[in-house]
Image (cartoon, rainbow, N blue to C red; front, side, top):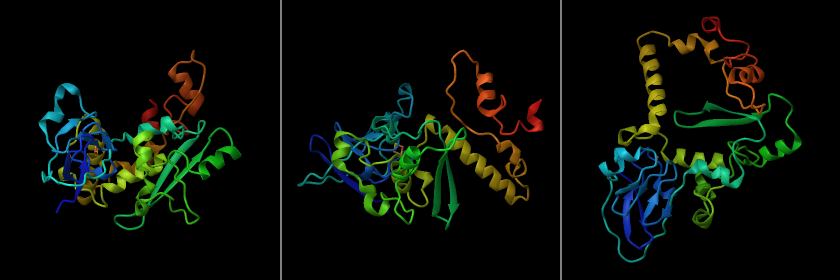
Length: 282
Ligand code: FES
């Protein structure tokens, strides 16, 4: 059975819609109330109270994708009486730029390690370092208070803003200053990701041009799993050296070309740590 969210638009029209966004299943309860519609905070799809998609910023306008679909699974029941609170958009990741808490502090490298606990839960370790120099006390203090992809945590390392307290979402803040009303990039990410559910129902998704990376990753993982089931170890497990490549930022003189910057930043033109694997060096 689908769960629903009730909302009233800026004209006072009330509708009951499927709780999960038909794009990739984020909970529309987190959404932001905008002009005559509710906008999903994950990638910005917007729906009216009838469930029509009004805006689909993840697709090319000339594809008319938004006109080809409604909000599938929508309950068209109409509520009367009290108008319920409306919630609106959030392009969650854009927010970081406006509040100055973006994922970079200087040129620090940032990393996540996911450690499974059960089939549907994991610990996420987030850490930052500067490959060029020790972190300063000011940077350490910034991370400790939560910064970018590093959540503000309690003594037990549980984030202060989590699913159990609705990420301390502030609807007034969401209305006036912040797309999500949730403080912290990490917490914003957690909110939309948690809201997809422990096991998301991918059969109800409507993927588009900006999901190509998702599609390819899923295919890669499924192909590896299929090969493993047939007794063939995936290439990725046998060629660890192919993963000795890393991302990194660099501020340098504009006169340098990319190859020179790569050498300066990584010690080689390919970006492989310790040099490219023999098979790629030729
Ligand atoms: S716009 Fe709702 S999940 Fe992507």
